[in-house]
Length: 311
Image (cartoon, rainbow, N blue to C red; front, side, top):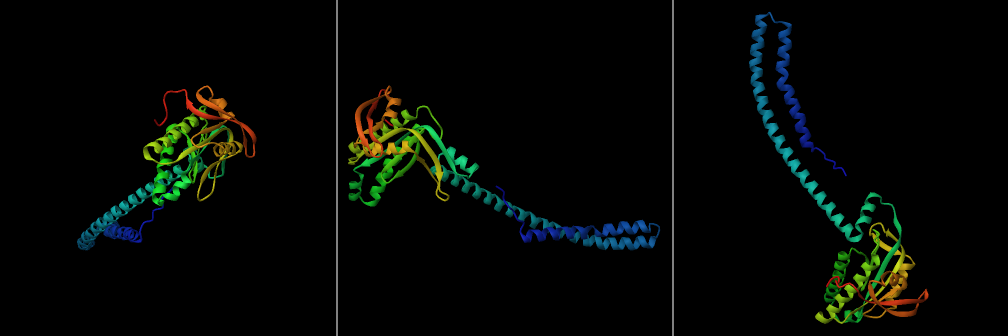
């Protein structure tokens, strides 16, 4: 990015006046040198040259005073313009930083960098991703009893807690829709423990909502669905960017949430196979899933590890 700096008209005039006065101040010396070269032997000519020189030296003194004054004004003008330029650069840097922060709030950091380097459409397939959908059960009737500001504050408190957990685990929050929350692991940067990271997130979210129920007296529960598979990720929009996921694996994760039970975490067999040696499950069995027929699913109930995220 380049800054186009224009010299004000008044400053340009000072440059012109300064050059003219310098030329005028040196004029008697130029004329005297030429005159002396032409007729060095004539005493009368030298006397005339001396008188003329004395007069022109007085004029030169006046010109020097004027030059000094002009230089003083010019110096002050340069300082003012320099201050204005520094302020403009600071404002530009501040605006760039705010734009960067805003972009990183909307898009993953890796995607934001890619978008700045190449504004063309961004789309990529990821073969190993675990997706989670979570919904707050009981929030809709609760919202009917709360004042608007109370409702927004409660939802903000819950989602800020979820955001902190996602950041702690290095997960990618995709979006929120109403009182629903979507998060994924394994993109935009692949990771081998994507299923474990989402499982830890789900258990931590469940524990956070339980604390809210017992300590805060808020009558809400959370219903979570998880699936693992292939997804397409990309950025859509021109003025309002959205980083979103598409694919059968995403749809199935959504079905795991909607067909689950309040206070429970339902996972597909694909996710279960990746986690069965590290986490505690209860087999739910075969259930009918819209658009997929019968699927065998499991309840995630805990982890063999002693350390709990967000505890």
